[in-house]
Amino acid sequence: MRTSLVLLSARLLDPATGGFLPQTALAVVDGRIAALGDDRTIRELADAATTVIDLRGAVVTPGLVDGHLHPVTGAELTHGLDLSGCTDLAEVRAALAAEVRRLAPGAWLHAWGLDPNAFGGRPVEAAALAPVLDGVPALLQLFDAHSMLASPRALELAGVDGPRSFDQAAEVVCDADGHPTGLLLEDAACELVERVAPQPTRTERRERLAAALRAMAATGLTGGHAMDANGDSLELYAELDEAGELPLRLRVAPWCQPGVDEDGLRALIGLQGRGGTSWRVDGVKLFMDGTIDNGTAWLERPDCHGESTHAFWPDPAHYTHVIGQLHRAGVPTATHAIGDAAVRHALDSVAKASADGPAGGSTGGPATRSSDGRAAGSAAATRPVRHRIEHIETVPDELVRRFAELGVVASMQPTHCCDFTRADHTDNWSRRLGEERADRAWRCRDLWDAGATVVLGSDWPIAPYPPLGVMAGARHRRPTRDLGQPPHNPGQALTALQALRAMTVNAAFAAGEEQLAGRIAVGHRADLTVLAADPLTTPDGELAELPVLLTVMDGRPTHRAEVLG
Image (cartoon, rainbow, N blue to C red; front, top):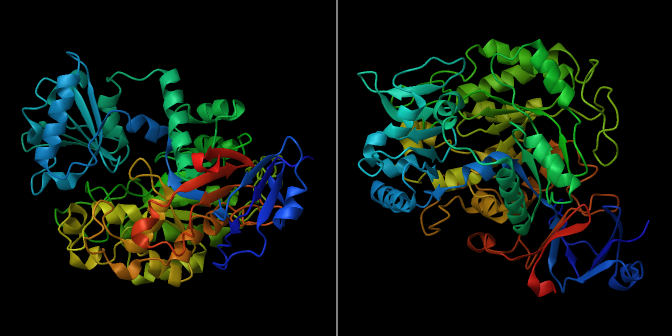
């Protein structure tokens, strides 16, 4: 096999130790690191067809991986008016008014990133945005992507004129007279209005997804754990992969919703291993609750409004049964659990599944993997089944310890803490919880110190995807837009090395791929991120702006800065 890529004059950073490897160059063959050595030795492995890049002392890390993102959904939701920069109602109204002036008569207004903190002490309802949206069909996605505001005209077109009942924890919020306020909580309620709004064509959706993935690669991302497979997501990934236009290695976990029956479970198990060169289905995503900000989390004590008292699954025992079934089939699970009650139930369910029987022993389980992680059969899984919990926004001490005891991966999004809460607890999230629980915000360091495997991600489109910004947030815990503000619970900050490990070594471990990824070593995948300086010594406040010079996935450059020629 010929050498496809050679990198010279590099500083090769080992996230296991935080030090640099003694070698200064590497060669890639068939998507793997084939050799490490000095510049002269590695240069000799190149031929006329080899891409040779002199990095001039730049720092190479294993490819950065986002532990939790939604590529297809994000590409769709972030099309329209960006409200994420609006900090109060005056700014929201001004942005909406400007957009309304640009709209054709009768056209729908789509917006995203609306922060409930912008409403101050007012209820989050469409009336707060009158008269700007009078007569305009509008859907405003709140930043958590679990809720939206629909204008009166949008509700009218959808025929939503009162409360509705759902099979899951969702709600059309209504006033005392039974009239909708415009606030829709969770997917089932949001879909009532979404389905009557104009939809993009499939070609438009494919182009938006491809553009989003290219932009991700330019920030240094080489992979992501995609936490949904809704609609035709898998077909879109397959098309881009076959066309050579998939610049990230994606590990996809389709959703398992409340009420799933045995046929539905068999279908989810049967999807495992489906994939291509750069993507595969590996795991299942479940929801144990919603969000604290909109009152749909599951807390052991109600929030200050008497909300967040119920699980997303109407029958939590059925969730426990499903976890057991998937565990026995060898399928790793990722459970959205934000509130303390939700996290406790998810941990209890994993403990019961582990006690009831070994993983991977049932027939019809997920495909085994070849050495590169691709599907290679239909027998039970041979890799360890590593369950994980996503978000973990507020938990007491005894739950922190159980993550390590049960081997459950803690998947965290530190920029949610940075950008949507405040150190003085005047934000919506903290006010709802009260001082005691707000002081337990995003306990990244406690989980790490307790022995849990912590993986970092963005949850894009909820927060920006650039991985250096995610790592920086884990280190400084300050608002991204104003680093002069005090940090929220600084004792939960990760060190620079921990933050790097959480997006390299730990991400590989969570996927059961520690022998293939997360390190710069011969035989490992050639998924690499090249930075202008050492991320471990770059100050917290400067890390997000550190230039990304080169991104390599499967041995091929997916981003190359002009400075490298």
